[in-house]
Image: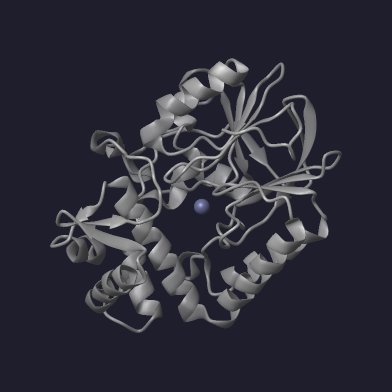
Length: 325
Ligand SMILES: [Zn+2]
């Protein structure tokens, strides 16, 4: 957490390596945390937030992927409310088995409920300032950005970062998900923000350059659906390796065959799951995104270790029913 000259003093920004999304803390009468990291680091996230802002009153999620909502359950147990984009809020409330794509992606999330459903154009008092909810579907259908007009700050979630754009799930969200993501990027660029706060990597202080690169990459995903499927598969595979401390080389293909995301990707690419699993392993090793060390395949990207027992949380299909609050 280094001081950010481009950011106002009333916010605390924390850049975090995978598998945790970056965190934004907005102190005030009701302190707010935007995105709560991965489940394995929930305790650390909650303690950090409390140390810097006191008891968290509200957690706002940019979207429901495991690296953004993993601290929700613990913070909720400590008294925080949870706010999320309307489609995700509704799915969480009815305990849809597809919640957080947790089972689909095999990315554990501890059970939580949503107290505040957010819609496009809504103005939220977060900490001491007003923010506008900007719906930015694409990476997930419920993805949202947060816009602070006085400081011209835009929290962009996984929509873009300094090195890429959010992967899109063509199998789950439809073949037009890439087009939807591109439209969301254009909408964000039209706000002409001064600074972008992405969920991974550093703060972006040259939004024009960042959007130019992101729009180019996003258009490629529209023009090349197979490439988009490959891109998503590589990101999901890499995340799986990170949260498991690597996977033994002789088990990795059987792990991959058993995954819903892999079989869906194989269908879209016109391959068998076995062929895709083998190809994914070979190509990521060749590109250097995955490395073989001590008989295990590991993700090469920097990441914080995860204790294996912290992954033992139930899939949403068996989450306890929501109680009226
Ligand atoms: Zn995500």
